[in-house]
Length: 225
Image 1 (cartoon, rainbow, N blue to C red):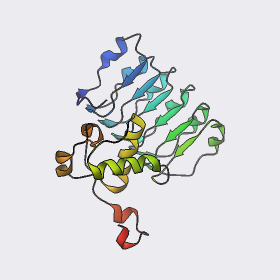
Image 2: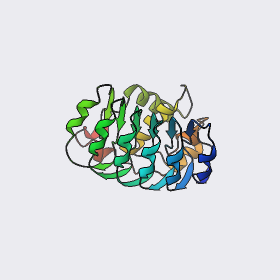
Image 3: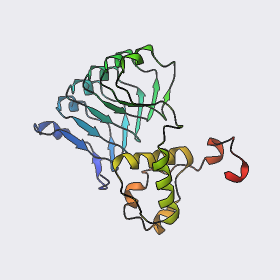
Image 4: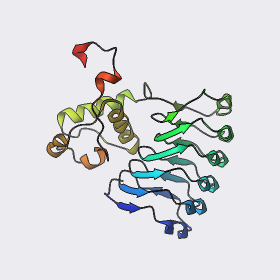
């Protein structure tokens, strides 16, 4: 992850018949997700923190082997693809972007889901009744709030203030960091230049977020903000 890769997602991935995992987290990939990816037989796909745009192709619903699909922190938009409801082995679906509309009824078929996140999107409507089918669900996030892991948040803030690393980091913790940035705003360019964090290029978001603590925490006392 975080290799500063650029360009678009290669369609040639479909020729790698033994490929089971695609992890291109925190790079500078742009363009759309190729429709040909529907021919893949991968188990995990993570494209967090790139510059991908457009819609989720309906063909992604043909990857019946897929167990994890993580598309957070890109520029994807439109409605969530109803075809994802065909991914009956899917355990994790995390895709907060600029999606709108409602959660497709076909998602009621995703009975193996343990983690479902669309927070930060522009989704509307009520929570569907079929959520009762997700009997294995342990994490549900449809908005920014207490879904943020407070332990991770504390560790992250400590490192940001100190400018030094004190903890081991995983993809999941880096996700927490970017949630905080979206919620409160991200550090300035000057901060990143002076930072001594060994993995600063991984922590730094692809695009900066405007400081918005006052707007987010309107009920906090003035001195706290």
